[in-house]
Amino acid sequence: MITLNTPIDMHLHLREGKMLRDVIPYTYNQFAAAVVMPNLVPPVDNIDRLLSYKDEILQNSKNFTPLMNLFMREYTKEELEVLKDEIFAIKLYPAGITTNSEEGVKSIENVYPVLEIMQELDIPLSVHGETNGFVLDREREFAVVYEKLACDFPNLKIIMEHISTYNLVELLDKYDNLYATITLHHLLLTLDDLIGGSLNPHNFCKPVVKTPKDRDALQKIVKSGHKKVMFGSDSAPHSIKNKLKGAAGLFSAPVILPALAEFFEGDVETFQKFISDNARENFDLNIPEREVVLVEEEYIAPQLVGEVKPMFAGRRFTYSVKNF
Ligand code: NCD
Ligand code: ZN
Image (cartoon, rainbow, N blue to C red; front, side, top):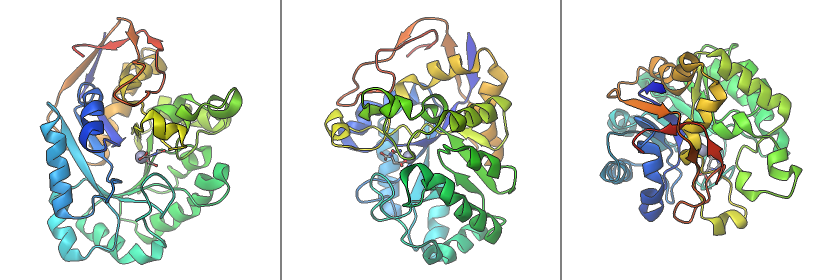
């Protein structure tokens, strides 16, 4: 048996309406809290939209704390003073870089005044760090942007979301104010799982899964219990129909804790840090405590949730989440 205290998913896509209602039980049954991404259409970038989205999440969940992220645009100080108490962070998407990011930032300089205010008000910055270069180089190339942001805003906490390359792992110890989330799929999959055999569009996401060397660096830093590394699933549901049209995103929520229990091979202390303690300490998160228990009973990942095919559909796991 594994008992986890207050698991938190630091990067989650819940969508809205029917899709949200279909997918959200897989999160609130495994996690006490999650950071909810704002890339809806239109984006979550004002107080009304933020509060109504939060309300929709609360109406459809139990014992669950949504930590809301706001979509980056050119906010004024007055706006952020109002929004501050309702949000965890502001998410910066370079324009057009991933699903629903068309309204994103065209040039980082445009939002320098916002970053200045965020630093002053102590609002963390969350970043989708990819350039629009060659697909396998996009995240590595973005490292210079992270370095510049880390230097220009030394008191701004910057979260490098869903890191997938060994060079971003190396950046973590270079700047005090850089943090990282790591997903289940970047920890376990490589390009072989996407294009090594027959093409598997269900393993396609942004940033794309990378080389064994990158995956091994991610596994190593997670197994070390590094304090600045936090679990963020980036679970991103799309209907099978849209996946077959090329939509980016893996729906990993149904398999997260069973898969991580196998990954940590009995090292519950490090599992606990990755899934909760590091995030709570790095960001002073004040979330009602809740225990989530994994028992040694077979769990078979569902084949279908609503119109979505989950990661590892049909796979058997040795641990299952109790009372789920
Ligand atoms: C995410 C989505 O579908 O919203 N897709 C993805 O491939 N990860 C957006 C994102 O986080 O990039
Ligand atoms: Zn995401």
